[in-house]
Image (tube, rainbow, N blue to C red; front, side, top):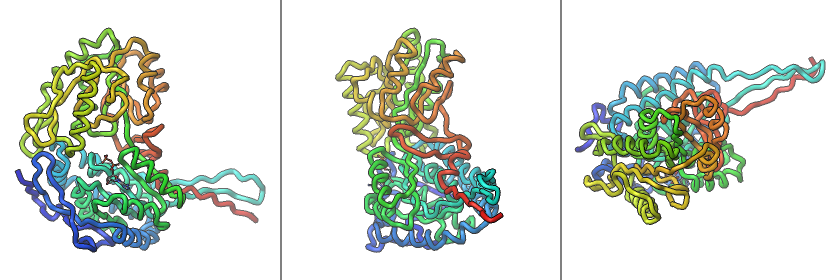
Amino acid sequence: MSLVLSDPDLLRQRALIDGEWFDADNGNACDVTNPASGELLGTVPDMGADETRRAIDAAHAAFPAWAKKTAKERAQILRRMFDLMLQHQDDLAALMTAEQGKPLAEAKGEVAYSASFLEWFGEEAKRMYGDTIPGHAGDKRILTLRQPVGVVAAITPWNFPSAMLGRKIGPALAAGCTVVCKPATQTPFSALALGVIAQRAGLPPGVLNIVTGHDAAAIGEEMTGNPKVRKLSFTGSTAVGKRLMAQCAEGMKRVSLELGGNAPFIVFDDADLDAAVAGAIASKYRNTGQTCVCANRLFVQEGVYEAFAEKLVAAVAALRVGDGLQGATDQGPLIDAKALAKVEEHVADATAKGARVATGGKRHALGSTFFEPTVLLDVDAGMLIAREETFGPVAPLFRFQTEDEVIAMANATEFGLAGYFYTRDLARSWRVSEALECGIVGINTGLISTEVAPFGGVKQSGTGREGSKYGLNDYTELKYVCVGGV
Ligand code: ADP
């Protein structure tokens, strides 16, 4: 089914630099396809370092005037963007489902979630307070100011084409920074639509620039090498994040990195099993298992292992798989053939080493990149799926006996983004929350994302926080002012 928008202007096939829409200098374009059908949706300019440099120049030129506006003036524009996003929620969601594959209901939720960062940070930046500090000498006074860091480069992934951008531009623009962003090659239309919305909301030219292109390394090298950029905010794989951090070291740019996860999801034998199943479905199968906070390893205590597995398998077998633009679905296709191959590899490795397929386990009859929602039993630490992020609809169930044992198992990973557990024991809730090596803990819930809370990881899952009052700090510098001769 082809994509029909009530406002076709939201589908932009050009990139946004300094308030104007451009093709690539070389005239080349990249195809954007629907992963559910392989259908060509359109193209975007195949830009490189030169266009990126021009976008950075535009952001740099726009910075002083944008930073000088009052927080309230900036907030009013962000509020208009928020309103426009909700007004066009259906179109933005359809565009997202078409380019990314997620169920339409999830896409609508993502548009609202993305918009919430614009609203919340617009409000929060009005409270970017400094301090007055009791001085160290009678003739001196001390105070602090918080100022925007400057030009921000933002690189975003395909799994949340709107939200990952909203999470970055919300705090950046609210704080007074200007932005050059590069959306993922697979899903640029959601980002470009935000560019249209920003213009309609009255965001001045150059404050938000969006460059597209398949040569991410060339665009990234310009962003990280250009001295006019003061900060990089990246969401994506750990390997690319490390590379970008190293590139940023040369110019001592600030970095915020949201990288891979390998989230443990622990079910203790005192858990409410129905609630744990609902949480596992929400955490594991949302976006077809393609989120960095998806439960990747499900640890189930021995006494409830069989009962939990039985309930989970029933719930997973009932998930509706299909093209999100054609009726209600719970699960869409994977983003591309590479993603499908990785999921197949994880399942093949696990079954070769003794895991059992309780449901699913293979490509879906719908073809394309659809994979059956899958549950694997008797999984152990020697399998690939225990170490790597699967990024697909496969729930591997591990068995454990004691709390100490499962904490050690949960922490036996270089990642540390989210962790979840289900228990009714209050003391255990505290102990396990404190012991898990991760930035986000969900107790008796599988859904933890909100603009009002700090989202981010420890260990190799990254650095920095998005959302909440802490998220604004990532886009400001603290300046200490010492007044003498008083
Ligand atoms: P994924 O495996 O989820 O696609 P990536 O880390 O490869 O994760 O991609 C996340 C984002 O980083 C995308 O926008 C992608 O184009 C971009 N990217 C990939 N490689 C580089 C690179 N070398 N420099 C800058 N950006 C990159």
